[in-house]
Image (cartoon, rainbow, N blue to C red; front, side):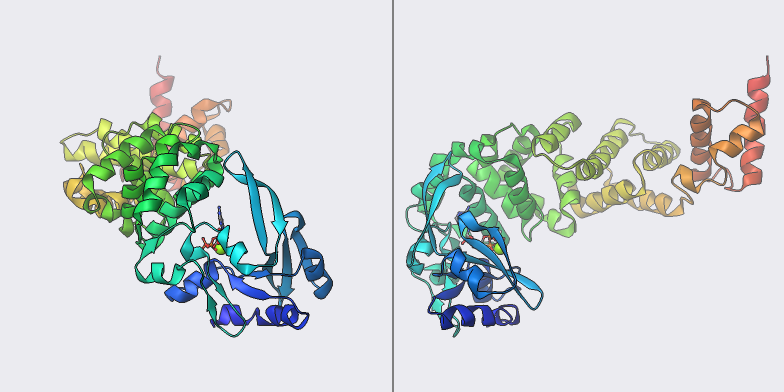
Length: 421
Ligand code: ATP
Ligand code: MG
């Protein structure tokens, strides 16, 4: 029994001593069998929520109506959920009601996949009535019982099936896959936040290329509540290209950079990329980062020029507009992509120019707006920001030193030009 689960053993022991069954369930059992690090440790019990609450001094009634109580043990909270059966699912998503039951086997039956429907007892014995163990051995994802029924009850399970397959590089068994294709249009009942969360785990996981090919091969994303135009284009392409063309995604260490990489692939317009992120309900800060990389990419393409000097200028302007971080991420993507990238030959120079830029934001400039206005003796206004930006560009291009003296000298020159009749 892994350490993380051993720490929760006193909870199981207390429940057992009072005549209740209690076992580890779900992800922690699966990850133990697979030899992976555990995330959260979940417990299931035959005790009712009231009985659980009565047995533990420190607990939080997290979701009493669903049977979940969070029990504190050495400052860690463990979700203890009463064995339950779900009946009549509302709109292919949430069960309308749950009934508490006494049989573990029946509790495991309501779970999505066989690999997620195993339990472990206090002595370390596994209980695996639906063949999760052998599916792990065969490296395959399979629904518990009738796949069609499972997906009709809760459409999110289709996306979860693809997610677990891609996380573990498992294949999906034929019946489950066929049921998914048959019922895929039910995905529109799933809230976009949930779609986003699963997609994040797929794109951010260890095999984003496989995730993309599963999404494309199943066509599942075309059945989301809102259209994901770019996603459809790029994932359809991924299907054709199979694994090889997208395997560079694994070299990118953040999920948002991977989204940016997918959404800057040929054939995806920036507006489509933006619409896709909006449809996915991506937070403002995340879509800001992703769109900065995408916009920078399209600006570079639009200003593409053969002369070295113009390339340098447009690159530095783009860095100033979208920020150093977006520029570094863009380079990261371009380098990982390698073989098919339009700027492949220019990358070493662009990287060098970026590293040579002394400053990349107005904050770093040796004078600020107030100093500028006082020196020029003009009313504050939009001209200040514009002037500072021009100074920043000159400094970033290496044509002007970032010292107050040099900057003000340049201001003098512009002042003369403007003062002339
Ligand atoms: P991880 O947390 O590593 O992503 P997990 O298996 O712990 O994986 P959770 O979403 O935390 O996944 O759910 C815990 C368990 O609850 C699952 O292992 C599964 O048995 C069950 N479960 C979760 N969501 C569903 C669902 N939509 N339908 C059926 N069972 C589910
Ligand atoms: Mg979990």
